[in-house]
Amino acid sequence: MSDPSSIDALIDPDERGERERQQARIHSFLLTHDPMTSAEYYALTGMSAGRKALTQSRARVTELYYAGMLAKLERRVCSVTGRVVTVWKALPPPWTPNESPDTRELLQQHLKEALREVARLKTQVCELQAELRTCHFG
Image 1: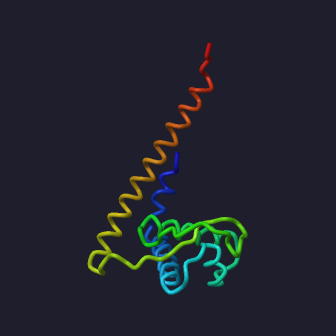
Image 2: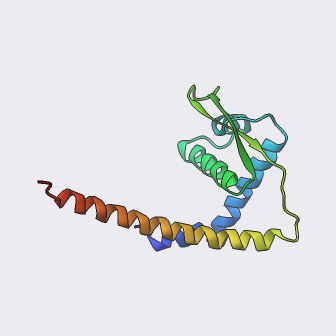
Image 3: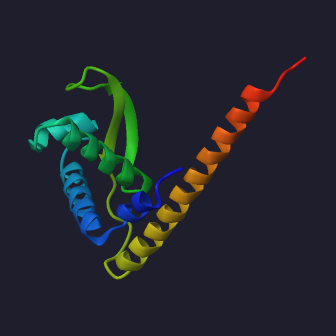
């Protein structure tokens, strides 16, 4: 099960501010450039080196996708990694500035609820796996 502090950290105001800045940078860049993979974005923008920065970049891309701000365009060989991966295309914002804070709050609440549901389901899967291991079919 996920640690409740991990769920709370996900919406911590300081961390949320940095996450939102990263999301905004990625979205703005992709709006003004041809569609690309997350690794290509990372390489083109010269973000700080390291696996953690690349992982964070990919996490922000995934968040933008689930927020409806990016679309999966196709799968092709990435020019950076050499692997077949998703190519992302930025979508123009469908919201107005007046509805953004309410939307953000609502999305944060949905995210927190979804993470709790994932933790509950993970526990249920573990319990079912343990039960299956003790079953004797005869």
